[in-house]
Length: 205
Image 1 (cartoon, rainbow, N blue to C red):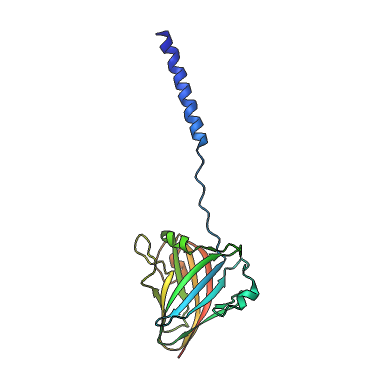
Image 2: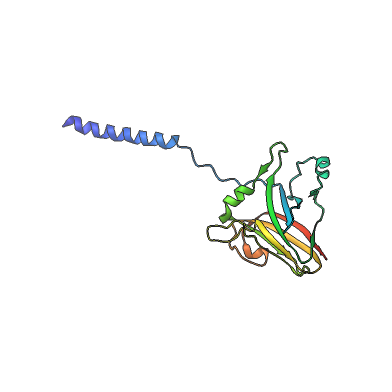
């Protein structure tokens, strides 16, 4: 009987020490870190054509990691370098447009962030704000666009449609954790802006 009285508190103390030691060994879950985004590319292909034109946009606040001379030699790219980029389109036409997102802070190890954005479609939204001066021009989700778990299109793959001649500014956004997935202005979506790019659409006959 005396042995049982002493064994119970010893066993309880041992069990407490064991649980405490195990809990200390468990590493805390690492906090999710947002990806660094330094470069956005729009790949524009006219429907019925195999020729793709690429337009590069340096994300504000980051220096472009590519060598300028090499970049200028690439005829398929427009060197943004903070200048206003003009995207030339033909009237009465449709274009397939893909948005590609990169971290090129290390030119020897350029990271394609696009797949991560697609995997986290519930937490992201691409939005193109078309200014009032652009008429007869529309942007819609493409048939091969990514959709989130509620069926909302991500707008990372889009179809651009033109009618007559027009020109004007378009602003593209990647929004993180939007409060809404639909809207006609940037404010309608809420959330935080991961990046913002601006270009002029120039449609000619």
